[in-house]
Image (cartoon, rainbow over all chains, first blue to last red; front, top):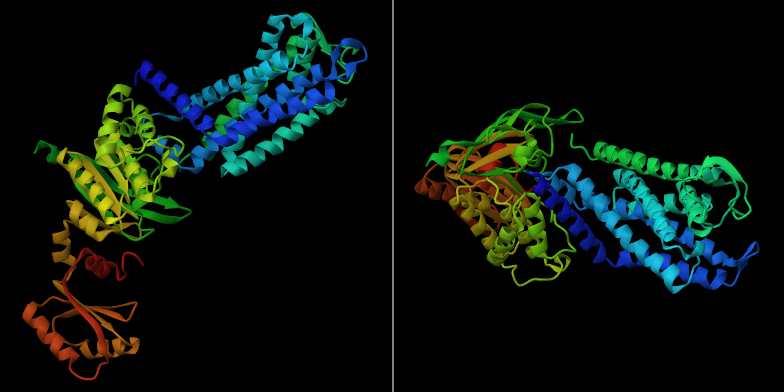
Length: 274
Length: 319
């Protein structure tokens, strides 16, 4: 097959996956409904509470990063269910009897999930920053764009875990269950929803994205020259560590590459025909 | 004519073993281009495994399988571009429309979208699905079955593998599917049909392959098989009481022309004869004389593929 045919095939898989997603009511509930609901609840609870050290900022402004990370974490559930349904409904097997090849199926799935993530994040950014008035450093649009990239990269890194789960899960329900069992504890243990101090946070991927987002977007730290702040509960006055801020981005990218490669390998091994 | 000379499929000593259990046992088979063959056999006979090997889903443990002279284990990507598979289950995307499904699977075969759009309309119209523009999850079982086949048709492959394509269909839908399969033959396509339906095999196929316990136990046209393995006639008698069957069986055991008997469920006995019509009547008269209990019905018929299967394996296909 020619390169242009390959591109058409990958685009068709992306379009098909997006159609399936947007025609499924559960998508609206899980991927859009819950994050929006929590954001609005957070707005009413935390918007009136200003941060003691900076009267311009409210607890809501910091809580938004947790909500964005929470939204991006749905990549795990989305990727896990998408591939598990293909397995469960035997469409993967039928596709395997066509010349399409697994690499294009994976690429198509990852791209469709990436596109879907853009929709989710745009909606969350618009509602949080433009409708609910969350504040960021000097209202600098480039920082918001950088924040978008940080959360987006983190969202992509969650897809790999989804593929790992889909390699094992036998049904879509099991995939959702396993994903929730991973996503929710990791989110809380990372301190992204409720900040807390413990070495355990460093082992939870959402921590790096949340910390980076708060320092760069809300506090205006420079990603190239500044360092990671050491106290998540009092991030404004926290002392700097020796760890460069850009290192957090490297960690997110490494998790992204590592989990996707591992996920594809496990999926291929577990669904290989003997 | 040239088409019929070329080999579409060539299987040599093909063997598949699962957990030390031989599922396909050294089978040999050649299928010519443009031929329709039916694989007949009970569940577990090895039909689906054979098809899965030919469609590159499974790898054989031993032996070779060539499709258009390409080895299924080595040239799988080439083979995939010339086959169309209709699985036994409904395998398509239920949140897409029928047309969207057809176009999607056609694109996976590298067919241009402009051609697919036109072909999809033609195929859906032929299979009576052209009026449905809603999600396929709302379709009836028969419609889903037809869509399952339509997806393979749009790929326009050279070799079709149809696994129970008419299972659960009403007679009208079955007829529509049969017509589509016959049309494939007219277009010179090769079709491998897996079925439990003896009549379907008889009507559609040039050759019938009977499988049992992983082996091919007989092959040939349905007439050849009936001549070789069947008896010319059979008589089916249904008694009112089951005990009468055994008494009747004892009484007729030594009668001439009787090749074998088979006691079925529902107080039914089948007698297979190799004699002609006159001898037959004589046997019936002789065997039924005396007190053997009430008879509910008696059916006299020519041998069917079902009888051939029964003769070869000692059991009915649907057991």
